Length: 185
Image 1 (cartoon, rainbow, N blue to C red):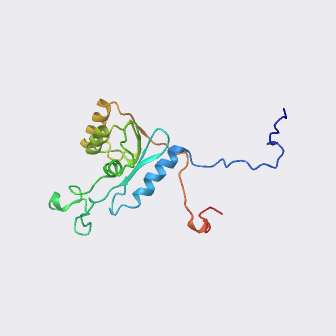
Image 2: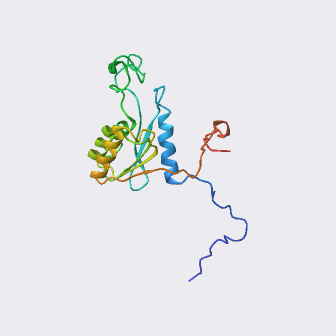
Image 3: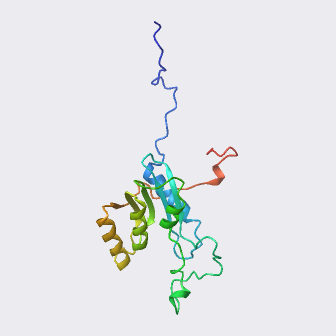
């Protein structure tokens, strides 16, 4: 039997893999933030990315007005003389849209990466959808009643949540450095 020759990986002629690639959590949070760039909200752009156990994206979403509703005819302000003249009764949150935009039968057992800690209404959706974990970046509304209720609901349902701690502080897409084959030069 002939002995199979293995390539000499230590001969100095082999190219090594990149060391500075995005790790999965950074990648998924970056997808959430890229999705947020689709939001037309002038004050809050939030994105969400749902990932299954195989590290496959099964849903993405961003905050915006409901499908079929003209977002030029609805208010985008945070405050007004009447709550009906603010965005709050109308806008769909990123978490809702990510769940509704899923490309799988369900999202049970999946992880949601989201830019902003979910409110109580989104926590209810997350629980009902069967998500198993939430990874968020910002918790700027931590002390509001909605966020207190959200944490209470998530804890009761046994859904852990943790703040994302980025290893890099900046991810840049330089479209000028992408060649006509779609690859970085």
